[in-house]
Image (tube, rainbow, N blue to C red; front, side, top):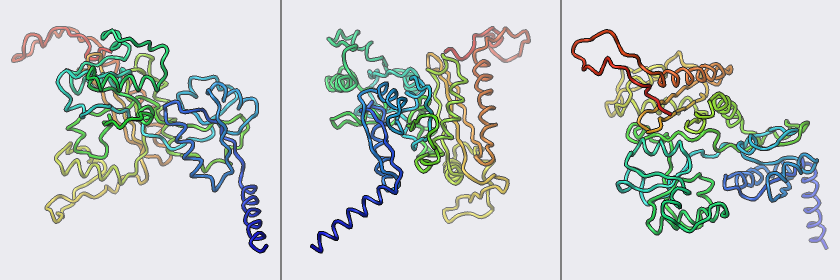
Length: 401
């Protein structure tokens, strides 16, 4: 009997503890191969000591949105692309989860540098297709429907889902009809068989590779997961769930994305991240020590007269540097033939919202430089001795989109 009383007391204590925690019903949908469902589950597990969660699943996002609007549930998890494309009138974003890795992956036996000459790749993203061709112009890159039609394969792409599509891609690769395919990380996580992946990223972890290997700045707005609620929901109650860095990066990235023309949005890479100042300084030191871009860190680092044990120059932070983390903005656009690309990088302090001015300047610079690269060059009347005759002739703009 004593044991029974103790057990009852433990259960009663647990019930009282659950009653003390705010109760939140989170609406979700089955996996859409974008990583949202898995990230939402991990967030619930991580924060279950602070909230009494109940997770309810609905078959489709449209159904979940209408259910939330009618008053059932407190929060709905979705990707930012779903938020921007669906009818969300009467709803609001109340929290951002930590941003997922936005890069895409190449599923192949080798890295893109080591694929055989003329390798056949399937890629649905025009941006990544151009980035791959910039790296290797010999690659043959097509969409899935183009490959199916060219090889006269018996597949009806209108009647297959994502899972069947992934199985088809892997089957084509195993049968040596293609050498690889490019998919999002969310889709890759759903592949059942063990395959090799190669991240098409920015090589941030190895600065020396920044000049040895092409960058793949990811498509805009990838990797954002938001928690949506009805108007009037007390946002402060779930402030612990909100990732401030992801929220800030989204607002900057979305403002730049919305400023682009429809044509540029499909062929532009855009990525915004928050970095510690120490991380940036360490990266610059590695670049300088390895004889890359000797001027790149001159605004942040100054050389010391003292030498290290390995006879390398010691670099110290400049006294004029504003302390605190930085917002790093990366942007690129590639021409139709991938032979011309425009890449822009801007780093701004977070303190006192200095990045807001930097964002606005960045938007203006994109428009100015894209227009400049598309302008035709008139024939030069001035003759400069020593230069070839075609130097003076009229030329079309460099950047053909």
